[in-house]
Length: 131
Image (spheres, rainbow, N blue to C red):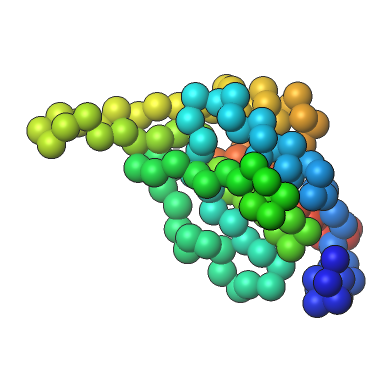
């Protein structure tokens, strides 16, 4: 862990919920879902999450890295996962919504990952405030 991250964690009194190994396990387990859900990520060092907003059913998939270099890491404060995907089937036809809410919930339970369901999203904390 770099000094900047360690200092931020200490100053804010944060307690880790995840580590590199757990993030990597989650990223690898996503392959078992019907599609890789899109997500929004908030790092310890940024004021705003990226992307700034996320729809409940985005028209794109998430980029869940499978290698140590591409996995999340100790600088992640939280991620917000959208378990639905809006698939286009044609110009004149309405979009189809694919949903993996139940599968994602089961995966998070199986991996014993702390999460909160909030307004149709799954929020997975990397850190929680020390209470």
